[in-house]
Each structure stands twice: as structure tokens, then as C-alpha cells.
Image 1 (tube, rainbow, N blue to C red):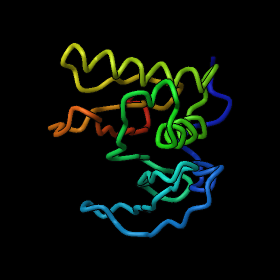
Image 2: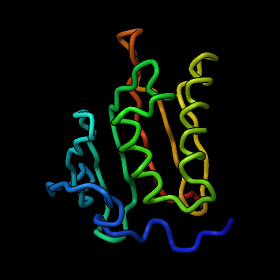
Image 3: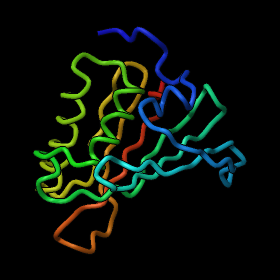
Image 4: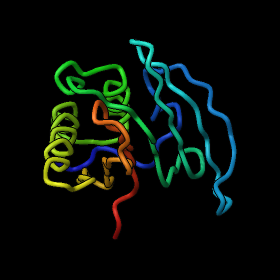
Length: 152
């Protein structure tokens, strides 16, 4: 399905639709504008977000260090719900929520085969879901969701 809008020509407000959050402005080491903040999920969990690039023209959206626990996939915990909402706000795809859940399931399968990331392109956006290494506790995994313009 072709994108109906240029996915990475979004304002911070469009990316964060559904959440009240104050972003703090800073810069990357390379001097790119960056806005960072913390989203509080309905269940009390917190999810960090970084939007890198000029307002309205992000070059990267990252949700780093999200902690997922067993059962989060089935119960769609607060952390996963935040990530899914941001994914759906940015990506244009048929059945966006199902596409996100499939991406998470694919990561769980990848971990079983000793791979640490899955990626998929949706229109003009590349989505990468990766496990942060090293994992220090078998009871949960820390993952990062990154959305960038598709190369090429």
C-alpha cells in the first residue's frame, strides 16, 4: 500500500499524538537538533523518546532502552502500547497495529536464534527493533525501537 503522506515530514506533535509530553531541546554530538522526553504509560511505566533533526523533518525517532517482560506481547503492556502508538503515528501501512505486533513477535523469534534485531521497511520509513546487549537479566529484555528514513 503506497504511503498517503510523507512519513518523515511529521511535526513532534504528530509523532507524539495521544500523549502529553514536554520535550527538552538539545543537540547530538554532530550538532543536529534533538528533542528528548519521557512518556508515562497508563500503567505507570515510562518510555524515553528522542527525536533527532529539525522540527517537521526528523532524521531519527528513537525509543531507547524499553524493558519488556514475559507476557508483555500477549498483554500489550504499557511500554509496548507507547511504542505501538508512536509506530502507528509515524508509519503508514495497512493494519499498522498488527504490523507492529508482528515486528515484536519476530524479534522474540530472532532472539531464540541468537539474532539481536529485526528490521522492516514501511513506505519511506525503516523500522528497526533491536535488543540492547548485553542482557543482564533473564526475566526481561531491553529493546530499542528506531524509525529512520529508508536508505536510497
